[in-house]
Amino acid sequence: MDYRTRIEDKLTRHLEPVRLRIKDVSHRHAGHADRRVSDAPEGGETHFSVEVVSARFDGMARLARHRLVNELLADELKERVHALQLRTLTPAEDAAAADSPRRR
Image 1: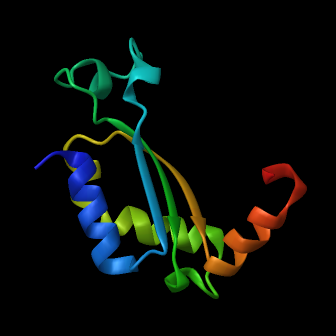
Image 2: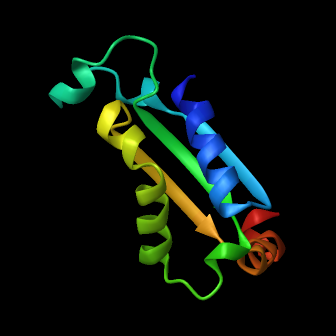
């Protein structure tokens, strides 16, 4: 199973997201000086941008949300995934952001 699918499965199972967007952005880091990335097999799946909207984040600070996601994806981070760019929102925060003039 590819890493994108593994990430999607775990986050869906544990966070029951209203919305989940996962994008492989490994191509942006081609030629990266970090040995973990340059030694990684071709095909990407080292850097991901992840947006999760979940009621499970209600009452949690942003740092706690990111820690939770990193804990859920600990195996993937140990194996191949080098970096996660996270955007973690509650449904209310997502709705407020959608109503923001900046997102229209």
